[in-house]
Amino acid sequence: MSDLLKRGGFLIPLLLMCALPFYLDAFWLRIGLFSMAAAIGAVGLGLLSGTAGQLSLGHAFFLAVGAYGYVWLAGENGPGLPPALALVLAVLLAGVAGGLFSPVAGRVKGVYLGVATLALVFLGHHVLLTADSVTGGFNGSSVPPLELGGFTFAQADPELTVLGVPFGAEERLWYLGLVLFALTWFTARGLLRGRPGRALVALRDSETAASVMGVHVAKYRSAAFVVSSMYAGLAGVLLALSFRRVVPDYFSLALSVDYLAMIVIGGLGSVAGATAGAVFVTALPLLMTRYADQLPLVAAPGSGDGSLGPTEAARYLYGAAIVVILLFAPDGLRGLARRTRARLGRRPPRPAPSDTGAEPRPPATAARAKEHTP
Image (tube, rainbow, N blue to C red; front, side, top):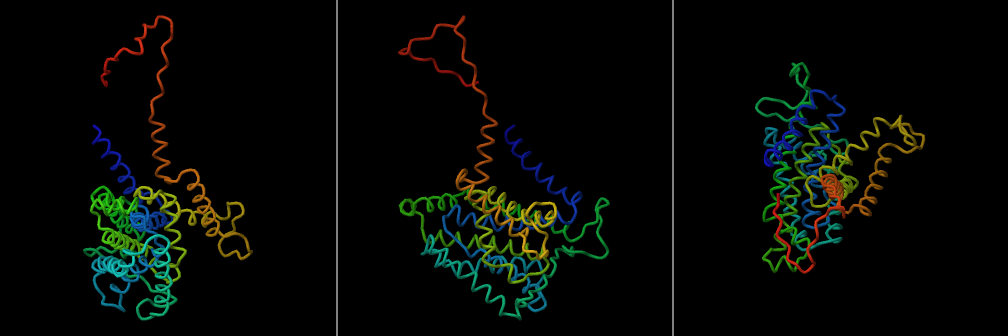
């Protein structure tokens, strides 16, 4: 019965996610797409920083490698490979970039690793601006649509209609993002529950104890960095397909800080927590932009009157959320939800028996009979 409930608890949200494109308009589907892409990258950073205990400020660099790698590999300026193959190679390319940096990650830790990865963001941004033939320079590049078996994940002519609902680019990309996110979810959870996950947790808690137990410290640090880079590359590809155009300014230090905020708000070392934090940080500025004219103290984008814009207001809000989380719920939204669920599921205490007609209690020294669990 418990297995059936667990399967139902997973299948019901999955079926709801599959049905959403039939009821939501393009704006809400874009929020979902951006949130799924951010969740994939946040899961990778959660494995690196939350589970392995390695601080990284260069996550935006590996997202850029995945996004621009796909654009160049599948585009006219590059080899012009099939888009599906370009997607796989872009993810592998991000893993190779992480592997080239892994010797540093294997020997440096803490704030020193954070500063080292910070250099990747500035170096990557400079390359994106100067390598015009590959990246398109300041103006960026258009993203070739993904094709699988003749099916295009973009607006097509003639228009595809399913159950009377027109399926444009957002509806098609929604299911692609859902598949990629499900792949990320199951692989990350399998990794955390297996021997590599236990080794990374031991490494985070105490390097000395982990090495005594047979964990190769430098090897597992490097492996965590490579795996995190590949998740970031996959997130970059999905972001590129969702935006349909990539520009260098998007992959800046602010994006790396956003991803750190995601895993802190959601809960370090948790796949579900990283997902919740990614949805919160991604959806908040988009929602505030849409409803800026209805919010107090927030000006509509482009108003130019010096008021607080929706993007800046959103950053203040999830900055305040980080402070509140660190003070009152250090394990993030995931831990808060777990404690709330435990309190709601806790049975109320049984009332104490009254003295009237109560059976005499045995003396304190007498042995109690073992109670059988019902």
